[in-house]
Length: 67
Image (tube, rainbow, N blue to C red; front, top):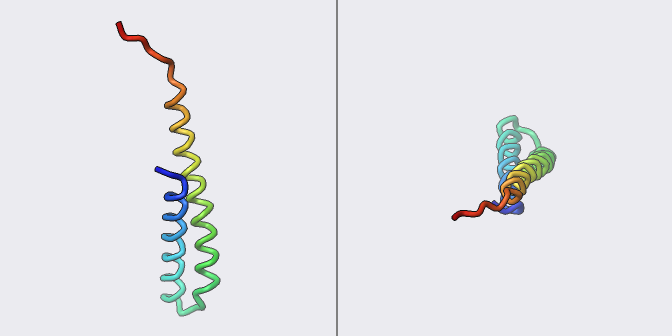
């Protein structure tokens, strides 16, 4: 997956979850959405970095000759 897709998706989901929480708790939604979006972006970056590391490990495999 591409890094932008992962980060965008987690940011959206975290923002939506924090919005729903704020509405359920009858609080102002703006601060919750901003904080949720921030944490979603941080989590998305961590997930994207983990996938990137796995992709790099697969590319470093030795070339095997088949005879």
